[in-house]
Length: 403
Image (cartoon, rainbow, N blue to C red; front, side):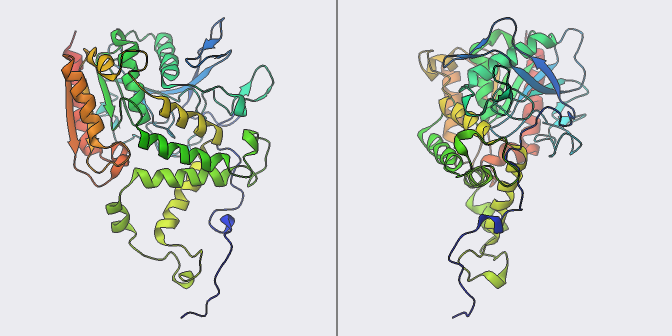
């Protein structure tokens, strides 16, 4: 028995810092950092796959290396759900986190910036400089908020194609990305096969599965049921008064799906965060503290409405939609493809990448499939750089030799 009092009510403020922002989106007036900007729209609105359109679209992007005179050395890197254009580089003014693929991009690395011109763009619907729900709607002068239309992976890729046009890149040496980034890679192959010399979809899928949609739906519910979500109209809320609880919870749920039992047991076990409160109802274990930390980090750099839009875009992903099915769409790929799996990935399990490989090969295409034996789960596409690096480098070399 213990004589410690039991806490019968849950106070989220006891687990998170006071004053988390209503939105972690990059806004006009914030430090630009290494971002560059391009206006996508011309004299006509940008039509969206699901209907409707956007009159004005701006895309934020970053580049590394130098574009060759013939533009033959350009590589497009596509980010995952909560990523952004800052794929390489450190924390600096304008960028609150290290580049999410910094171990793979740079001089002498797999994406060798002494050889290649590497581009990464924040996706349409995102919140780190590209047009999304946190952006100002020119028709109203206020944030789009929940009026921002639903976009798809195909819409995102179409904006990237316009960026390539503006940069003078007729054909990417490769398009590479993991998770949601891999979905973009596949759409490049299906939509613009003549614009890509090779593809590298990593830990991704040809069409979102029922399990992936289920996890995403629960995460979105965590956001919209936050009492401070206010139907998506929260941009004028003060620090600590926005939907930070819902967004943090969504991130905590997703973080569990990104990792594995092995990693959690080895790193945290059953250790109490504070042994003095172990028998309190809301006393935390170390694993809870870890999840709280990741929830807090996301709130500081992301936007709840963007999370909803991009999460749904992933659910809508189906490379075979309107193309006769995945087998027909992937069977038309004729560029070299590299796909990889992480053995412990419970969110995008290896059988999905195996199927992708088999469908490409069955259609007469060239797909190299590799599996990394790693306990890191889905996050292995971010963490297993020693495994991925040589595969990416070899694929780029192969692409350079193709006509």
